[in-house]
Length: 199
Ligand code: NI
Image 1 (cartoon, rainbow, N blue to C red):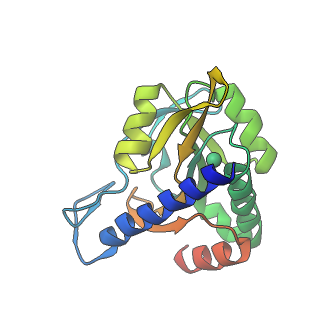
Image 2: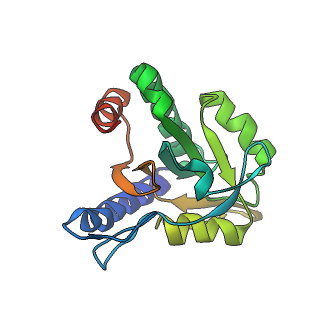
Image 3: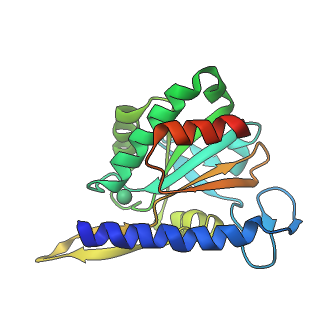
C-alpha cells in the first residue's frame, strides 16, 4: 500500500492548499460555509449514523465537530489516524466533551451502520460513524467537505476494490462552520495541543 499512501498524502497536501485558500481573508456566508469565492468547506448533509439514525448537519450544531474521512477496510492510513484522534481526545481530557468526533466513510457500499458501529467503537466510543447512500456520501464528503476519494479496482480481482482518499481532519465550529484543517495528523500530542487552543 506504499503507492496508495503516497497518493493519499499527496491528496492531503492538495487539500491543504485548497483549505489554505479558504483561510485567507474572506467573507463568511452563514452557517456551514466559509468562502473566499474559491473554496467552501462544510455545508448541509443528510446521512445515517452508526446506530442507524438518520441525521443532518443540524444534529451536530451546538458542539464543535472533529471530522475525519476514510473507510473501514483501509489497511493503514485510516486506523492509524483514528488512533491519533482517539489518543488526542484522551489527552484533551474534559475539554473533549465540547467536541463530537466523527468518522465519515468514503465507502458507503461496504460501510453499513453495523460495520461502522463495530469499527468506531474499537477506537473510541465517543466517535460517531457516518454513512449513507453513495449519493449522500458524495454530496457530504466530496461536495460539502471537498474531500477527494475514488474507488480503485484491486489488482487481480475485479470484484474487490480499495478507495483512494485524502487523509484530512477538519474542525468545524458550533455553527457548522469551518475552523481549521489538520492534514494527515500523525502526532496525538500536537493534535491535542492544537485543538486545546481552539476549544
Ligand atoms: Ni484510509
